[in-house]
Length: 461
Length: 110
Picture 1 (cartoon, rainbow over the protein chains, first blue to last red):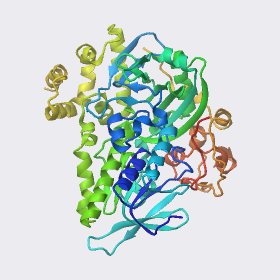
Picture 2 (cartoon, each protein chain N blue to C red):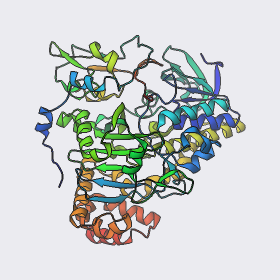
Picture 3 (cartoon, rainbow over the protein chains, first blue to last red):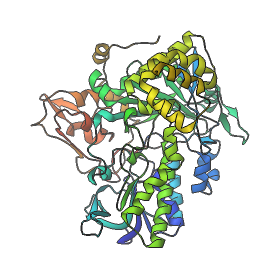
Picture 4 (cartoon, each protein chain N blue to C red):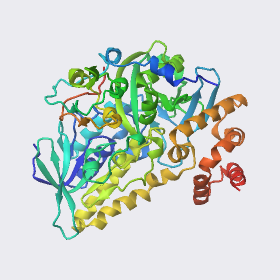
């Protein structure tokens, strides 16, 4: 039972987005209720393997001394290492982080971090309401600005009222669909992910994933040595390994389009079997300790501007607003930052006593003009994933890796691979990519892709 | 380059039902709070017996009884709450919800 019958802010879902929203609001003196479906935050979730230190410390002042940071592995940058069926040939293709926020990235397990983050929010004054499923929103149809969301309905039919609601309940959000913000879920644009967690001796993990000791004394990775691996994709699915030395675990995550699963009638366990085979060098002697399954947006459905993220009284944060990208593993950061942004906005709204529709619209403008929005316009592989059709991309990326290996461009960083490797596959990729490539290049004037742009322009002409 | 699986080969070897349940036993952790209501309901009148849910469910929550999809037998113990069955049912015979708060699958350190 909530302690009050009315709040300044109700946050639905105690994940990275929800807890960031709740702690920021509580610290700004708002009455905030944090609602979570599981008994303890962190019990029902999926991916999100990397946090950005700069933004996490801004949200949680004691982030660096959190228990899960002790001995945590940090990434200097994200690089992706392709493996070809356990072929010893390996090629690096970088997903280049393009923003200052993306530094000092610890590899985390959300079972630990979500729990800790929610605890911080509660300590700061947010009121927890766990073991509670939210089934719907409460509408007020008689306001001066028309219909407005004014509260939530729990599974017990109980109504809780609030001036503002942040839906941080993740992909396939019940509130987002029942409030009409997201029109019916399109299963052709859905993926199912399986995350399998393996336990392995820490020293073995160190050895196999090529860690080194960073400046801060923690195990670290840089270009060329990374815990993120993608296999090649014979049938439209993607997978990666992420190793966490601190926890002594390897996490393998597999994503597959529902559409493809239906066409091939393939159970995701077959993909697990296949990828375990692909990554057997990493998994030798490891034991499966845990598994979970989770829906995600398909790559071609990912786009931060795909849907509206606000209604009067209600905003969508993180995955609920489709701001998720499984390839990057950093959706949690996007959610955190959006959650914080909204809490700050709500504090300003309370101060001005202005809860108008225009103020809620400001949320969308704010995140679109921040790095969260900017992140969507980076020219890199993630952009390719976002803009293209999933299957085509998987095939194309496969071809790219195959060609790179074929051309004996081994273990070269991204910058060297571009002129040699990507140029080779441009004839296939350009029809698909040229419009967005050129558009974004013009927008950002990125010089590093100039050679590619020149070729793209030539082919397009 | 690489292995190219053939779709029909995959289907023949697909893992489903009991075989999947054997795999998730012990590693799919369920909350100690028991669910009291079936959060998934299959309309057996509508079900055409196409077996998609049975073939694809990642936790083996579906069985086929009398040619129709049956979730009730295993679903309460095995469902992983991923939502796949709802997406794929071609005739909309699956009524889906999240389980009650504080129940269902939990994700925790072993």
